[in-house]
Structures are given as C-alpha cells and as structure tokens.
Amino acid sequence: MNPQYSPNQNQPSLLAIASIAGGLVWWALQLDAPLAGGHVDWFSAFVYFMAGLFCLHTAIRLLENISHFIDFLASRKPSGQHGSAAWAKIKEYKDALSRSKRGPFWGRALDGSRPALFFDYASNAMTIAPAGSGKGIFTVVTNIMSILHSKVIADFKGELVCMCKAALEKRGEIVRVLNPGNLWQNIIGQSDSYNPLDIIADDLTRPSGLRDVMDDLREMCAQILPEPGDKETDNSYFREGSRRLITDAIFFEVMVDLFDATLSSVALLIENRTRLEDMARWVAGVDLEGKAHPEGPFPIERTEWAQGHDPQDLAEFAGLVRARAKNLIALMSGGDNRTFDSFITGSQIALAPFAFGRLAPAMGRSTFRMSDLKEGKRPTTLFIVADASRMEAYKSFVGLMQWCCMTAVKRHDNKERPVHYILDEATNYKVNGLENLLTWGRSYGLRLHLIFQDLAAFERTYGKTALDTLLSETEIKQFLPGQRSPKTLELISKQMLGDQTMMAIGTSRSNEQPGLSENLSEAGRPLATPDEIRRLLAGILFVRQHLPILFEPVSYAEIQPWRAQVGINPFHGKPFKKKVKIRL
Image (cartoon, rainbow, N blue to C red; front, side):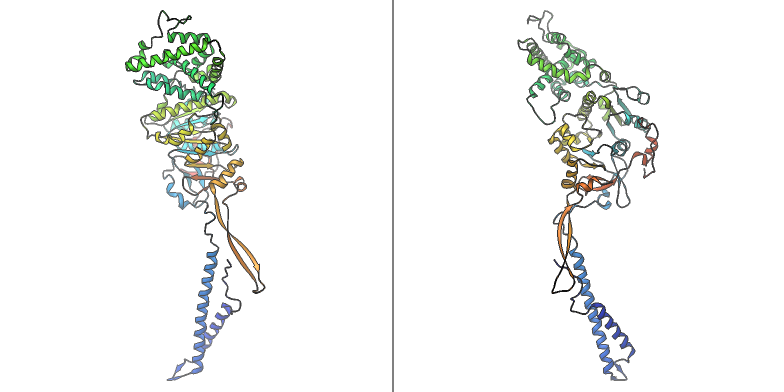
C-alpha cells in the first residue's frame, strides 16, 4: 500500500490557498458592501465572491487533508493477522485481583498504579526460578505469610521454618515441624514425628477399613519405590517384586504392633532374612518342615483390631494374608534364590534411608495427625525440613511425607477447606501420582504450588507426560527474572507469549513523481524473543486467560508489616529489611 496524506504535487498547497483566501477576506472587508445605496458595486461583489470561493476551497482542501491523515494513521495500525500478543494493562485484570490483599502473592505490576498482585487459584500454580533469582525472598516466604489457610511447606535448609514459625504462631496458626536432622534446634525446638504406617493401622482399626488395606499399601509402596519418570524398563518386574516384599513386611509389622509399627522396624525385618521367614511362617501357621504349626497361625481373628470388622471381610482378609505369607515362604525356600535375592535387594535399598539414622525417630509414634490440616478453627502449617547435605536420603522422606499429607487431605470429609502445598525445589524429590493430583486435586481442596529451577529438571524427575500436564493444568505461571534455560526461554517466547503484528515501512523513489513514497506491509514478530526474555529485569506472570503481566518481584523485606514479622535467616544472621514498596 502507498498511503499519502499530502495533496497532489500538481495542485497548490493548502497553505497557499488559505493565504489567498485570507488576503481576499481582508481586502473585501476594506471595500464597501456590494449592495450600498440601493445599487450594486460590481467590483466589491466580485472580491466578495472570490473571497467566499477561496474560503470554500480552503475548507474542502482541509477536509481532504484530514481524510488523508486519518487514512495515513489507519494504515499504520496493525490488523493483527500475524498475531495479537501484547502485555496486559491493569484495567484488563484488575477484577481478578484479590480485593482483601490476602492469598497467594506474585509481586508488583509495572503498569498503571503498580498494584500488588494477589491472585488466588483453585488448583495449581508454578514458579520457575533459576538459581540466584531470589525465589525464597520473592515467592516462598511471601506466600507463607500471605496465605491464611493450612499449608504444607518443603524446607530444604531449615531456614523457612526459622524465619516464619514465630510469626505464624503469633497470628494464631498451629505450626508442626518434621525436622529429622534437628537443624537449628535452638530456634525451632523439638521436632514432631509422623508415622506413615498410621494409614495402614487406621485401615485395620476402622470399620470396613480392611477393604482399603491392599490399595493403600500399593500406593505407599509405589511412593517408597517409584518407577523412574514415566519410563518402564525391564526392571519393572523386579521393582514390583520388591514392592510386594515391602507390602508383606508392612502387613506383618502392623498386624502385630498397630500404631507402634514403623518403617524402621519394617526395614530391619527385611534386613534379617531369618526373622522374616520366621514371621512369614508364624502368620501362615507353617513350621520349618512345611507342616501345620502345632500352635496354629498368627491369630488374626482374635486380635483387638479385628473385633470391629464384618466376619466375612475378616475371613477373606486373613485368608489373603496367610496365602501371601505362604507364597513368600515358597519364594525364600525355593531351589533358585536369584529371583528372591533381586526382590529383597531392591526392597532393602528402598527402605535403607528409614532403617536407622536420623529419619527413624521422625517417623516413630505420631505426635499429630495429617487430618489436622483440614480440621479445627485455626489453620495448621506443616514444615517438612530436609538436610540439603544429605539429599539422597532425605528426598525419600520428603516425598513420602508429602504423599501422606495429600492422602489424608484427599480422604477428609471436608472437601471445601483448602490446603496449600508450597513445594519448593519440587524436582529434588518425587511425589508419586503428582500428574493425577494436578488434574483432580482441586476437588479435594488441594492447591499445589510447584517451585523449581527449569522445565528440563521437572521432566527428568516426573517425565514428559507429567510436564505437559503441568503446563496445561496450572492456572498461574510465574517466571522470575534471570531465565537462562534454552528450553524454558523457547517455551515462554514461542508458545506462551506468541507473536504480535508489526508494520514494516519501506521507502522508494519514482522518476515520475518527485520525493519519496512509502510502502507499508504487515509482519509478525515475537512479543519477546528468547534473548529479550533472558535480559529482562522484570518477571513474567501468566494468570488464566489474561494477557501476560510484566511484574517486579518484591521481597518480604519490602512489605509492611511482614518485614517486621519474619525472623532472621540463620544463614545470614542479621535482619533483612529494605525500603518499603507495599503496605498491607
């Protein structure tokens, strides 16, 4: 297209016509009126006529030029056919902001009045924060302080509980701390303990709970010994055998000791083959020669926990347990022990972190119930503290505790009461079944906020299918400044931000017409290229269907009153306060 808003070069300019019209008007005003004394002054009438004619011509030319100018501006407005991506303005998302300035906090907008961004979510959120981006002060601590519901927080160095425990208790929350490494005990105090086998013991003591025992054991063993990512290999058979062995050992321990049975006692049972075989023979009622034991099998039907169950359910359950015990005896005493050796080695490796060490006391007799997260008038916050210097052992503990929390929340009758899971460093451990939780966790009040460094790390831990589910099922996606992963930069630029339509302007010179003429065309370009995103000092926030929001990360030290409420980070040893940017 060749838009031009100036008149044809062969016509006199508007300024010249307006000047002539002005001169004629001035001349006409100096002359007598055309009709004076009852007769016509033809000269004066001619001047008046020419002045009117030139004034009319000036008005027409002015309207022509205005029309050309409007066309000129319109021709430079992109049609959007190559993309309509743009940065959000506050007027477009202000209705989605939390009016109470409570709930999940995401920073401060860079447009308009620079409002604090409090966006709530009903299911899932994610934060991608590369190393050194300040996720702790910008996202984790601020969300711990801003969310007034029950929370579960993964704390890998113990700093979060040191900073937030006193502040949360002062405002009326119940704080539970699982701190097996006794990190910062002088600040945190004595660690709580939680026994994962309470889930199985609850099934045994709850009327009609026997029908749930096998399913819960299957879920628990899949968490203790998960499949790697979303891949199935030739070792899946041996892992399944190891899980079955762990299931049998848990059966034996919980049936006898109920709430005093622990994963430590299960691990020690599996380490001792002689004791394991003796236990299996006791349950099955078989002696060393394969004959019926004179004292009979373990009296499942006469245990205290058995009295509350339907006799038919109890008989079927006892038959199943004894049949599994006999199968285990056959496997252990068979001529070829290589299969059993593979099974028991896998189970021993999976349970090794819980057998003896600092994890065992934290998984002893429970000092609280996970259902507390859904009960009571006051919210409960649970910190799961790991030791970053022993992550190979502790990641199993963190993943198992997260699974126990979520299982208790899913089964609670109060589906409406939300529980927020702030899963910092979510790729350092694995929550089994996370992909399913992302799709239907909201039905149970589960609100997951996964925080990790880059998408490739998440894919390594949970698999490509889980990554696709994460990207589709998260209502809010926060990208802190400093993104440098090529995969993450490409995703933001090409798939999430999209393209915008730009006007490409070119000029050319013609021999037939003096001057330059413009040539306009539309072209698409990314709203922000990967390199532009890499160099951004602002973060990018995606909130449901709204346009992307550029935001400024704001630390808890810049928010009043949190800056005064949050305690000292033990790694720094001094208060962290900066100029106030937000007052609540």
